[in-house]
Image (cartoon, rainbow, N blue to C red; front, top):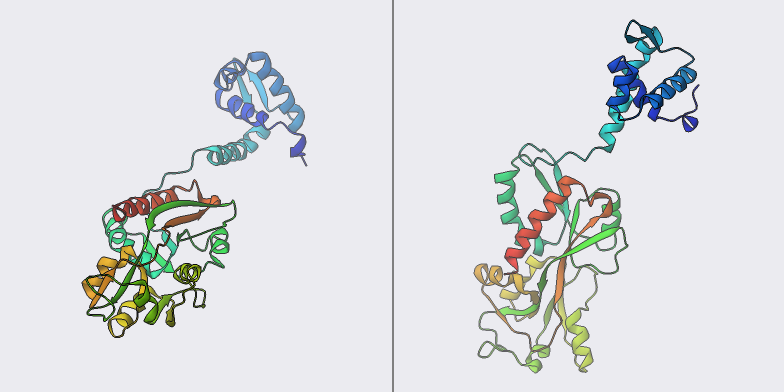
Length: 305
């Protein structure tokens, strides 16, 4: 058996050229080497395969039976290598039947889905979507295992093989029911803010958020009467009670349009934060993943206007 580690695979390129051209001179021209170099390659090929491989008949170098036998395999092997070295095939959304899986919150999904589905209908009618909840403890592993294509949310302290791009910046607004007793002239005092019970969105199964941390810095505390793991569980609860809550500003228009609630500026200085898109470095140059990222980036830019 031939030891590949000790074999110059460029000899196979020379073999292919000789088989195609049946001339040392033309074969040398085909692969851009000198005729002496091609003659030397033929000598090494004969030694490697223990066969003359090409025999001069008149003005041509005719392949031997051995050369005829191995030619299809050599050509197939070289074509496989060429395919591996070629640029990846571009992604054709119009004909693709891919299934993209996104990990995201119900909040961000509600913002991008209408436009994303519209784009898919127009440009990628056979592409399907699968949405799952973004679990901050496990989504990195899901990216590594190709279970999900992208994660959308707020991330920190990610490993170097997970790439991140900020999509938009968010801030908190307050929300309460219409005619809430604490809301006066569309404003809420800090004292009233902490006097009424609150609802808190959390995926950590705790009852502490950024609002509580900022209140604690001022020696204040609020009562968390309700925690929910879904943003869209909040408006119905708010509308039917005196509960207050802090929500991302992008949800404001949806909440006030479909629920009897009102949004207000919080009487507390809170930092903004970024909603980001995360993906595995393993898929950074994948044409389909790149296409999806560009679509979501464009949609997010419209949301941030």
